[in-house]
Length: 166
Ligand code: PNS
Image (cartoon, rainbow, N blue to C red; front, side, top):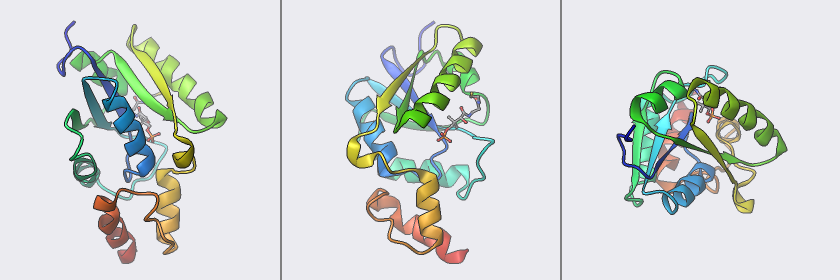
């Protein structure tokens, strides 16, 4: 089956609540490897969101504006349904440490079972980004700590505004 986004494309899925410099590092590196990177804002039932899906997509679009071969989409359902519907055959996930590798391996196996032939590729986080996570950013922001070295400058005002209200 041909892929809706072109043959040499990958899906980089996540909650992106909000996008961080860790995410951007993976997006840039995937964009240097694939013709098209589809960044998918998906729902993680284990996480309570701060930003709505439209805000997450908007922040990603601004953070990725300089990377021409990136497309941002939102998808409310199963990851494997998205890949089946679009014909995407490769999923990229970033791994920061052994705990990530453990949980990501399970997720890759489940997705591969739901959509046979789907490959998941792991990219190790760059060392300078290995401590960045969206949950850590949310926690620091909620205490008023400086998060400017963890998030793209284009979205910093959005995050500060969201947490100044809470
Ligand atoms: O950024 P996150 O929270 O680590 O991303 C996890 C995400 C959103 C990719 C994952 O929860 C997901 O794929 N959600 C869609 C629902 C689904 O397919 N679940 C089964 C995966 S095992």
